[in-house]
Length: 314
Length: 293
Image (cartoon, rainbow over all chains, first blue to last red; front, top):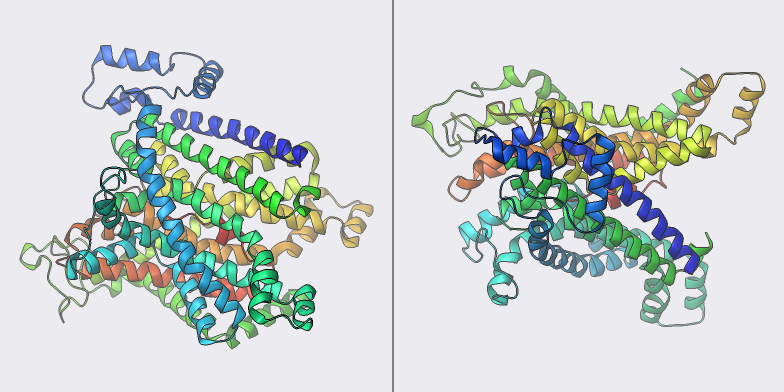
């Protein structure tokens, strides 16, 4: 197990270095001089020189990358071209908003997907099963931002139950946070739930046909005991991976929803950085998200290996 | 056409014909292609015909999908925007298919250090949420139709590379490949004539499903203002422009979104049906990897 963890950690570290290279090269892809592009018409030679020097753009490319990597390892992701603030500080300030939205959305998704996926598999071919399949197909096909707009139209416009957008920190006022997070979390949560439902259904169906389940039934165990003790315990192991992928995706992939609901998270920050051509902030946000994505995947692989020892053998 | 290819093609057609959802999806796709090609002629009004006297008018006989904040006919814009979505979907998936299959073929066929390097590169691309990487690429290259297509193509390349490599690894051990090697066939010929046709099934399925995801990604990029630039119509952009008026003018939110949904649904239904026939084991890669746009 220790060897497995070490091997996976090393693989993740190698990929992370590759990620820093891609993020670093993003700045090199900007046509022309990125500092000039970012400053636009507010051109001021002194600011320009300072930013170029601070970003290390006057150095050869390998030196620039070595410097970027070295600084990134110590948590220094440069300064914003716009505000001059440290990028790591700007990015970390936005993390709680994204985290609260992503976790709420995944919890909602689990709340919907678990009962629906399990019942659909156990009662395969029933009305619930058909409903689950329609729901899954709907979820993977609907643009979440369209569902968000429809949610705003219904719950904010017609019914007036929820605010159409905005953010209140959980620590500031949990009640108002809940009303503000409800629409964006349900919007992205429903899409995640549809993917999870499909996966849970097929995973449970697969285990239901296993020999040990037939043995358990032949022993005369009650249906409920067979499902809970034998089926779910095995069927839900691979589900851990999908839940984690969903969580990791939501941590960095809810740009559109954060823009739609004016939610001041990493996604909104990325969008604002794109609009302002603030490339260091864009690089910082992308790097943080990719690193989180890798970390979550690494933790899940380790957890998965703990739950299913066959993984380490493979 | 060989007998095997013909029988596979017939099997696929028969299976699609028997699946009512796949038939529905195919009909929608055919209609979409017709609209994509003939959209500008089918549109009852010009897509950029501004009419300030007709601003935010609800659906009516003159404007079946209503008008937008500039008095433009929403139906006409929805029809013409179909071409953009289909174009971006086809070109970006084409880029991902060509790049991914080439990389996967070489990695799986030659293995060794080339395989390690190429697949680690794919791992790196996989470490980014799809939309985030697409946004970053478009942000640095500049917004527009071409960059959106390239960006979406790049982010979907690793999926094709992995599927191809997995297929090649199993096919290259088959007797017919070893026989081709023994008679002195070149590597490129073996890959083209013997390996590629035998790994086509999962690639066809992935292409169909990726078209759905690519169209969703394009809509998301357009929504963020990073796709095709105004005043050219795009479904995502129409939703973005209309979001501020949606509580007063529901039609600005409903129709462009419904167009995206129907298109993606049609590709997914056909993709699922193809998967059931061609490659029933390929279930979760795209589903698990799909990030929320």
